[in-house]
Length: 208
Image (cartoon, rainbow, N blue to C red; front, side):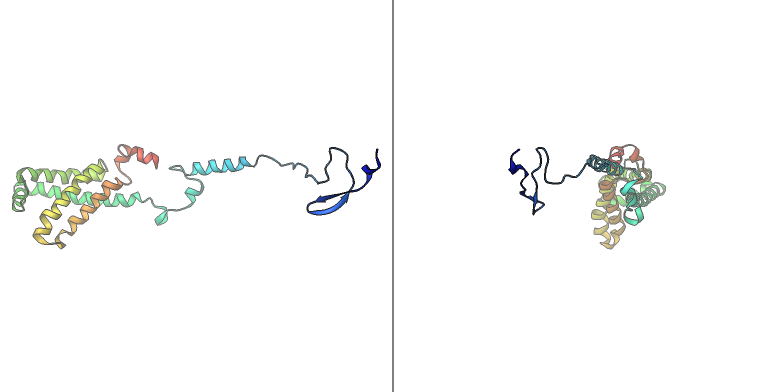
């Protein structure tokens, strides 16, 4: 061997110069960490965690962060608020419809004639039936959006055509509240505890 192979050479290790001897071919002057005994693909735990979080977000899941975080009002489903509005409005409509039939269609037709409702002889039984049958359907939560739309139209006509012109704004308070309740049912659906969730609203319930 030549003499200069044993002479020290100047190398830089981690930013600090130091003198090291010439190393045989295949060796490095920089230290190399030995492989750790627990070395593994670290992407697997994160992928597994992401899958668990995705499953926790499914409708009806009772585990994970979705179940631990309570919603508004202590975790009560907001659909129950819609249900309360639906039941109370349904009772009002059903009672008024029954009262119209119990009092006789003659008196209802006469009142419709007085307030200039077109075709009073036809509209009297139609409105009474709509309120009675529609109220029962709303209690059951069946065809809620359709019934709510028909009753909203009735309340709109009653408010603008009958109550406000004849008795003023304050006399239409109940009619306006029922109008808003029916619009809510059209837009939000039946809420909880409704037959529509097993039929018309089934796909929306499944999607969450």
